[in-house]
Image 1 (tube, rainbow, N blue to C red):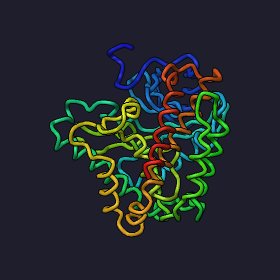
Image 2: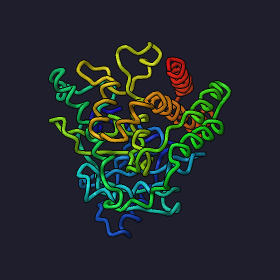
Image 3: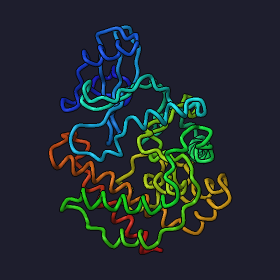
Length: 358
């Protein structure tokens, strides 16, 4: 990859190429003042939907989001829903990127897609940039800010934002457990565990729903954009957002939170700098978030954290397994996915070990 490319981008894989002439024509029809020809780069990371940096001939850039080709879970690739959530959040959440345009037709690029503002800044992956790493106190502040921002999102009024219709009512926990269990069974390949004991335990140990909050669905460091001072300026990848139990969103977020005292297999799974000196531990994250939320959310976390943690690990295993199944079928040739089968085995093993510890 050329060193001159913007951070976290690469040349577009052949299987993910787009017809830029058709895109430019569509943009013109929408009244967008792009100046052709367009250029295209592909963002690294993000394993579900495809994300591109589109730049016109005078240097103006935006981000394009669309589903991949091949078999996929439709609910995980609803571009209209994602664009609508971002548009509704705009007046309420400064860190929500602005939506520029949405296309609901398959006739332009083969799938629906949308264009949004390109937010420039730092996105943390496995390491923390030197500019943001000024000592343990700064690292602790980063992790505290991440927790506080999630709590603030969960405390926002879905009625005021205009997203109350995403609320399917009581039964969110049950829908998540039954839904993710079905997806795992449907996507399972012979090289990963059956996990029936784990799914049976989740079904039998569901706590009552707690609240009806706007949840992000994929809250992690590499979906957050930070400025040079470590302030949050962008929240990305709203594809799995909905209204539901905030405790479940926290459980899903902490499936990525690897720390220094974890077993070697799980530490090898680390995708974020959550083991950096100064970072909150998982226990500290749960306690801080609980204090911020208070009430029945804090009480449910104290009583049922084992369930939320195991759910988060299992859910992430299912997401990765769906991608692994696509890769094995030949629908994707992205070399990043070559180790996803091992990752699924690691997460299922981790979830089962947490079950036994309880």
